[in-house]
Image (cartoon, rainbow, N blue to C red):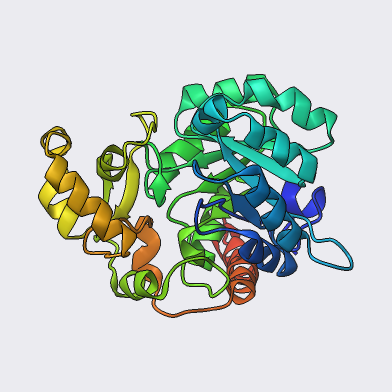
Amino acid sequence: MLNTLLTRDWGFRYPLIGAPMANTARGRLARAVTSAGGLGMIGVGHKDTPEFIEKEACIARGEGAPARFGIGLMAWVLEQRPQLFDATLRQLPFLVSISFGPVRPYVERLKEAGILVAAQVNNREAALEAARSGVDLIVAQGTEAGGHTGAVATLPLLQIVLDSVATPVAAAGGIASPRGVAAVLAAGAEGAWIGTSLLLCPESDTTEAAQARIRAARETDTVLTPLFDRVNRLAWPSEFPGRALKNEFTERWHGREAELMSSPEEIKLFRMAADRKDYNITSIFAGQAVGMLHEQRAAGEVVAWLGAGAEAILREFAGAILSGNG
């Protein structure tokens, strides 16, 4: 069995946490990931409500023996809608992650409620601030990740964060195979934070049309862009653009956001396309590991494959690498 904080102290079978992807990772996916031996997370987006949190937490918890689950919140949204934090507290999840802004204002209340706290970071200074804030887990998210992210790749960021803080660290971004999980564990991470690898799972809220595009995508078919946030007039902090699949809209407008925003007719056309889920125009957020996804697999199968596969790789190669006459 893999021996990390997540398995040894937190009681997971595998050191894997499902990323709280807004609009994609809801109660059904969270329960499936937890049931398979990881920790499933519910992603709370800017449009979601306290009622949404209660409903999805109930699904994640399930009947009978309650399943553990986590909830992911965005700091910039909480500043506008603090009721989402209060609703999260009422559900008493195992873990709450707060990303894309300061976590410090929320740590004390979470810990008083007996809830573990994670903070996702994208650079050294953010990791240091998260550690000073007293979080239980820092998630070093590299720019390979899907959705909103920073500018530093996973491997250098993981090394920087591990060398900078004493707080346990998980790795996120570009991890979608047993080799990826094994690599970050060998580097010193306590676990892997997985998102893109769950997009094709039937328990996710990814549409069939989006899944078809994901299956066809290569690792070179994503773009890191503020385009979709700008055209949707979302108040995302500018340091967190979004990684999404390239499409006709990004090919035309990526890098020309200011010009787009001065054209009401183009914005109207985008919103009409988004309403009908025309993925030639609207977004599918996915990381560079999308090139590794080719078939639909149940979330439990993905979690077991990643966890057991990483364990087998580490058992095999640890001995081989360390053996010899030296």
